[in-house]
Length: 409
Image (cartoon, rainbow, N blue to C red):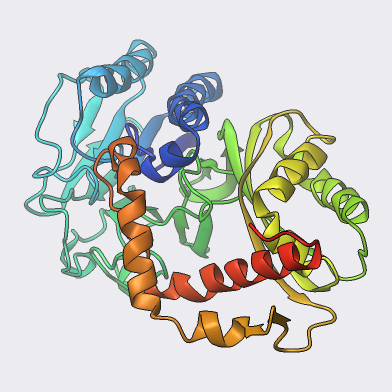
């Protein structure tokens, strides 16, 4: 039997995007809408491809709903598949575990949500497909479930669905941990995984696949995002076809500022560096983190005028495309002509700043920032001790720059 199915995961519908909201509420709203648009387009693509069924491997929602709008949206999209008689199989992950998302909305009859108590098998007899899987009941599931999955069904194309940190993944909590060998031991023909937000094929023949998430949500999730169509022929996976769904994209641009002796030259380099990013994004909104490195005579000026240069850099980047936003500018440069300890009016700034009580400084800064808490929906804005060197370096550069231009304020 030849057929195609769709494997996606980690929709994270309803993500609050708190960090992004603090920086730019309008951009945060666009990223939130992008997650919905990405799923809607995926459903459209699945119908156009005439897929036999759809697998969603966990974290459909980002957590408990604030209202019913997210649930209604998801049900409405699944109803489009129902009208095309396309079955959908769902497992819950850590973000939408049964005890995390307690609100319910009726889903159409084409949807099967796999049980939380133990892995079970669901068969599509017309296709000779057996789907094995299990949902999260609690957010923190730390047991290795793979060995307890059902044995393969002979004569069927066997698929395992699991939301897992397979082989351990940096930056991802070790939920339902397992190894590639644990999965291979089951003898299934395909493993549809979720939880890791980067597209990755852990093994071929049989395939063990992370499709990644549909839409990047932070600077840790750069580049194209999407899902996979899986073509099956004569009981074997013939081809994986990745479909890109993201409507807004995160990027990180690293630029060596060395060799650029003036601000205009550096801004021209910024414009050139964003060319490939804009080309790949094909008109999508880009939220970019720009990191400047290297030894440059502009080091003090960049630190002293951090905000002003960020504005100029964004303008330079937009020479490539109008929808580019500099989410954060990181100045990791060094002073080309540093003597290691300039004085200001006889005061050793290095000793003054480095010798200060960093903990007390951060405590005072944190207190001053409390006025912003209301915009973060209660999220903590407490500065960390590791922020101290960067803050002090920026203060030092600002004082030196003002001294060089005769400013005493």
